Image (tube, rainbow, N blue to C red):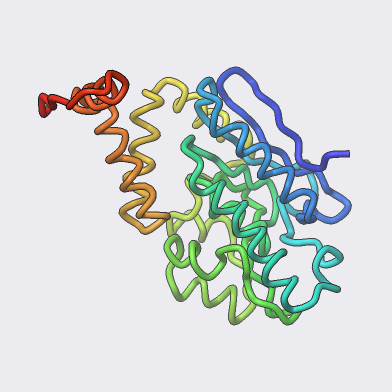
Length: 255
């Protein structure tokens, strides 16, 4: 039975974690299921915005299920668990559609990294964020020291990763990590998604790509994608394709 559900309501998609017995912690199967939903979304032109949610629990996501990696060899842990999870989180971060994390409870470890991979985060007032990995003898492995370093002040990141402190929702809002703190984070996220649905999908996609390129989120691919999109709309591209098919020398108009 799937523990990562996918639903569509109009032009808004929802990916929902459903592992409350483990505080919505990720298993290997959940990583695979989540990634499959992202692949489907990337090619769905009817979807304008994506919500990342979790069923009610004490945690939005408590990170990774220790039973999923506790017995792995060092090589398996690095190659399969860490790198495999990293690929899924990168795919979420680089999704062409805007994403909103609905953080209805605590986001620890991989749960915080999941929220960080989204474009915006709405937190419940009681929610806290933390990187507790050092307490069990590991370090953040799904971009907690990399992507989060671009989103949070260094001192705050060190408080969590080195000193084991939890950060409250209000403080996360003060530093810009949270877009909003709301008693009903889902309603607030729905309102944000509804606004996105009124905007130009192509303009939103390109704006996201430009911002990501500026802050180094897969900058090379983003720059080449933007350049390729611009050239694809040119008369030169149309002439080049036509000349290739006609087996003749192209006459590029330069526009």
